[in-house]
Amino acid sequence: MSKSKNNADFSPNEFVVYPSHGVGKIISVETQEVAGLSLEMFVISFEKDKMTLRVPTAKATAVGMRALSSNDIVSKAMDTLKGRARVKRAMWSRRAQEYEQKINSGDLISIAEVVRDLHRNDDQREQSYSERQLYEAALERLTREVAAVKGLCEDSAQRHVGDVLESRAA
Image (cartoon, rainbow, N blue to C red; front, top):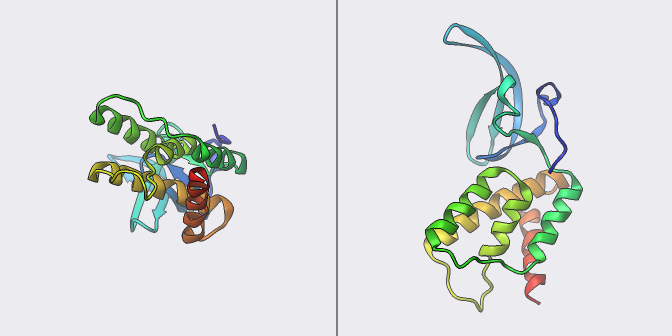
């Protein structure tokens, strides 16, 4: 999917993607004593969420932590947004569960699929509260990674994604 790195390749001041939280920045690598064991940890800051996460360096790839997507992956994600929404005829609870899994997978293209499928134009029916929550979560993850990869501010990235979604409707 994206360029793979092993633990030793992650370094302070580098942006990484943690599947269930999105884009964060490694602040430092520190050693902590946990249950009598000395563990080396990545300290990751998620500025927008005002959250700090510590991930053992040995477990980073096992939990799905990865480097930012390449420009190619971002381009594929934008192409995914341009496609037709694929809404299955399954019950909403099952679809919501699938969308949640895609969002938390950390895979940019899967997240783009959720944004594409849940995006509503002004002339379409209103979204339910849970649809809106999932859409906004996916959109936020997508725009944060696009912003980090392209070196844009989040507002610019959001406008870019919005423009791609609007061009689909035209």
